[in-house]
Image (cartoon, rainbow, N blue to C red; front, side, top):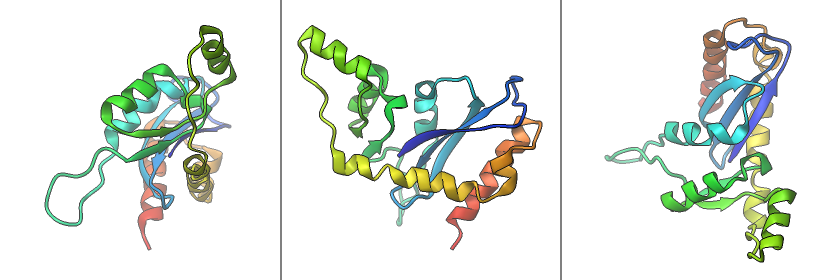
Length: 164
């Protein structure tokens, strides 16, 4: 499940007034990987960076899993590059298309992408993960002036969600 969430009232490393958290979480709403960017950075540019950071430990011996079976994301992640990346990796996608992409497919006479609506409904788990993260006042208000301080705060908040 993917989503990016802008936080305001601060200065980020690039001097803009917002910072985005690009987050991937599992089906139970626990964060798996995240990146921080300035608020004006497009969501789809960070998709592969977040996917590269996912590491899920196995119960027994062996390398950690790095590929989920399904990715459910919002329209901000609907691009040809992301869809081809997921196809190459063998990952199913539940990403709705933007209206301009739908109109382009209709104009060219191509078939529309099918959206698995039951899988897409599970995307609200990442929304709930962001709500849990924002219970930390320092994370929701973003008073930190330096990006690495804010990243440390996000890491601590993510670790707290993994604790029972």
